[in-house]
Image (cartoon, rainbow, N blue to C red; front, side):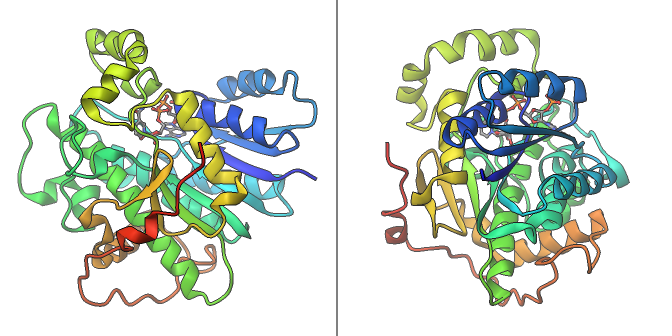
Length: 346
Ligand SMILES: NC(=O)c1ccc[n+]([C@@H]2O[C@H](COP(=O)([O-])OP(=O)(O)OC[C@H]3O[C@@H](n4cnc5c(N)ncnc54)[C@H](OP(=O)(O)O)[C@@H]3O)[C@@H](O)[C@H]2O)c1
């Protein structure tokens, strides 16, 4: 019997490439495709199903901006995966260009879309992921101010700064706030991965591993869809054709969606990844994430606020409520040597 894999954001970009790579690696898989556009999902399952008679493709509706929708999605996934989930791949995400957008409860819409939805989904399903399974949060190099990405660095000393940016008490110039909300939401993905990993480990019994992944810059995906037309054209038509030049200018982690999708699929199913947990993988190598991402107080603060905002119940999430004492505000992570062996083979 094939493995059971769950993927969010499969209709475009990285998610689409990951779906293809997963099926190449696991032709017998049950692949549960969670997206918000059911017509697009139906077209996708037909397309992916062609020539793959052994794969079982299950479209499931989810709008990550809605806690109700995420709960319905978790129930549907559970029904389709009675024997458990081998990998939960949380790839969906977007970038807004309009400042000040808010979602349910007045929460920043980018934070809700890119962090809260996956926080809730991961918590609802973590208990269904098999003990040697994997939970993967897709983050981005933009979460790290030390990396030159062209996106304003995250601003988040407390969790509420990400959820309600007005609490920062400072206002960004027009056009900056929305892009900063993106990098901040990607920092939340890393903080959330580390905190979930710790809570699973504190349960004292084997549990799935949890990783954060930076796919690298992937021009041509749908991420720039709200950009002005000229920038959109540059992103979609020009940049995908000059990847070597972009690498020379920006560093090695510039990829086509196909390459990043293959890297993400390997993290999900490749046996060589067994034992990696609580780490941040950039492209094919585990590296240190930003300094602030290791701040355990911030991780715990984000966890508590996210549980509150999503109404996460004590009985609905197996690992969420493990009592965790954050301890003093330490900022550390694995030593660099720990990473040297964590590299996907070419
Ligand atoms: N592109 C890059 O350079 C880059 C770099 C680093 C990290 N990333 C990360 O990679 C991931 C994928 O991005 P991408 O570049 O592949 O973008 P993309 O082509 O726009 O794909 C995003 C996917 O997420 C889905 N999605 C967005 N909001 C959703 C919601 N509320 N509910 C359900 N599904 C939702 C989209 O569905 P719809 O089609 O229905 O909108 C789409 O399938 C994101 O997490 C992004 O932050 C991208």
